[in-house]
Image 1 (tube, one colour):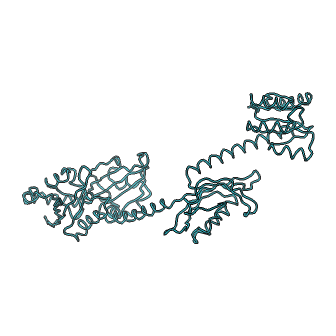
Image 2 (cartoon, rainbow, N blue to C red):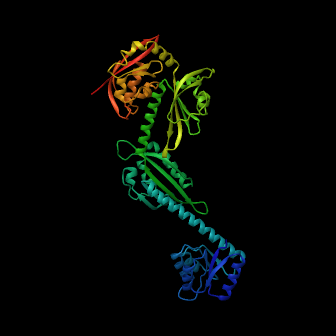
Image 3 (cartoon, one colour):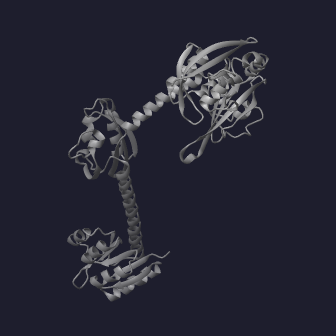
Length: 490
């Protein structure tokens, strides 16, 4: 692609020679003139990529004034041509921020070199301005306080170029004449002062980055502040500007702390559940198992986590997707034995409902099957007491916590038909969002320390209902079964 050059030169012979040189060098000369006024009009109507401007022009406007007018109207690099290299002229021309000078007479190489240097410098400045503008716009939207500091050789002479936002939102107090982080250092938590000082030194040395630190502003607890900074360097590699953005992340840190506490508590609860749990990512690679699954399969966490271990653990492979279904299968133990299990699956979705992983719950039903067989033998004895009882009741296998049977009164109270409850884990009935209810269910089904308690259970329509729960032990053919009697609380 030919680069388009406009020439302003009032000596016709010299102008013709420069045009020939430009065309021989491969440039496209869009026009030429010897008048400043005419140059402004012609550039307005057909802007070129670069203007070669003679400083000495006849007429009302000389080359320096003409360059200033063009620069007001267009972002076009200008290279001055001059036969007068005196200091006063150069100083006056410098005020128009030219992209170069060529002293007449000049060679083809000097002409081409000056043009290419000017074009390259102009492209760099455009890219820098675009990056600065993007950063400024993003900072205004994403931060509580953003600023640009012009870096001087001596840190004491650094100066604030611009700022937007409020220091009070970030630091808790309004800092007058904020210039650099040093102006807020007295608010930084003493333990974090070395971190912040070191970060600012790295910025002045040319390294981008971000940190999170605490500030003390008289509140009962410290504020957490996030600082994100970028540096702009000169062509010589010297740091010229530091763009900084501060954000008060105290609410975010508090939410993260609460989430971490809930994750720890949830992990403790999950580890007490007797059902095996397997969690995988979207590629089917295991990211979590609980101790119950390790015990069930005879494999350690290291052998299960980090690989596609579901295909090894589950007999018949993983053809069934984690779509929310339950099915009976077998787990293959490390010794090669198989254990009958009830598998319940769930898909894990992230943002925009995109699939990010899968959850598998394994319930050992070998003892459940034995218990069901025993229950069948004693069914006639239980039918009159259990199924005909007007009080909602469940039969739960004490070894696996699996529901063996429910009566019609339970179905009427909760809306769950027997086929949706029988074979599932008793823990699933509790309100997981209510940690105290889940703990009570754990105490009843696992520890059995509470023989009578109140508890909220989920109903089929998504509501919850309060019951007084009584627990009784039943032994059928040497198998212990728990009878849960649920008295609705009005």
